View (cartoon, rainbow, N blue to C red):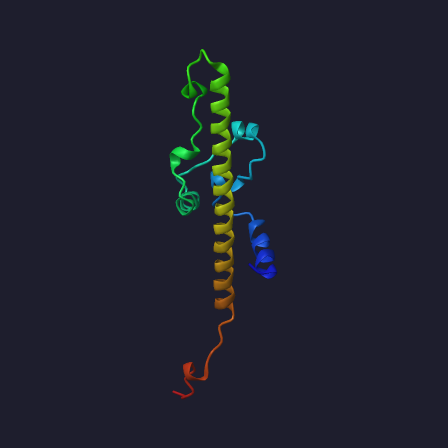
Length: 133
C-alpha cells in the first residue's frame, strides 16, 4: 500500500458513517482484562470474511467458562489452562481485527477510486452527436 493510499484510508476511516456496526470500534487487545469488557459479532460480513481468510472458526473466539478447564479441586491447573485459553482467544481476535481492518481499508480505497473515476468522466468526440436537428 502506497503512502497516498494510507493517507486516503486514514481520511476515510475518520469519516462518521450511518451504518456503524458493533465491530467498528474494535481495537487490538493489549492485555487479557480488556476482553472482559469487549463484545464482538462474528456474524458480521467483514468479521466473517476475516475469520474465513485466516482459517479461524467461531469456536476459536468464544470464551469458555473457567469450570470447563479441569476439576474444581485443582484450581492451579484449572487457572493455567483457562489463562492459556484466554491468551489464544486474544491472539485470534487480534489477528481477525488486523485482517478486518485491512479489508476495510482496501474496501475504502476501492470505493474512493471508483468515485474518482466517475468524477473524471470526459466526453470523447465519438460520443458527442455533432449533427444539428
